[in-house]
Length: 141
Image 1 (cartoon, one colour):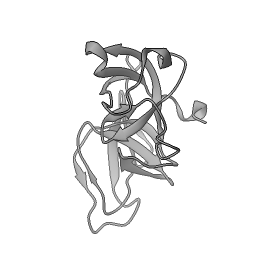
Image 2: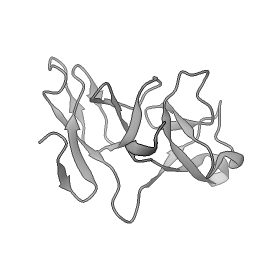
Image 3: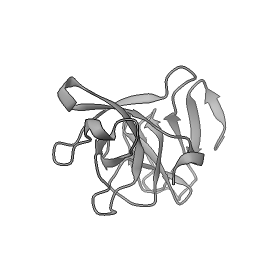
């Protein structure tokens, strides 16, 4: 059931064909289909993948991907911070962080090559982990 709520915090959305999704990676939507976390533009993080899915040999939208969008009490994720382009404390709560890998965030858009992951809320574990709020679609620029 594409786009229907399946359970508290889980959604089922149409997946990009010829793609492999790993559990726990960012789940991004681009051109109407879910893609795994990657450095790309024009995509928006919607949550994390809740299942392994291989859509090899399948057209776009034929398969659905279950994604974790958080629940009423928790809509934040602890995500590894990029070593090369780290999110800083100064960005927490007021700026964006950007997708720099399957499940990693960076402090900049990499020269307009990265999509927004969400808002960094705080740094953890000596800055190696970023608590990220993944924003609703309506507030992403």
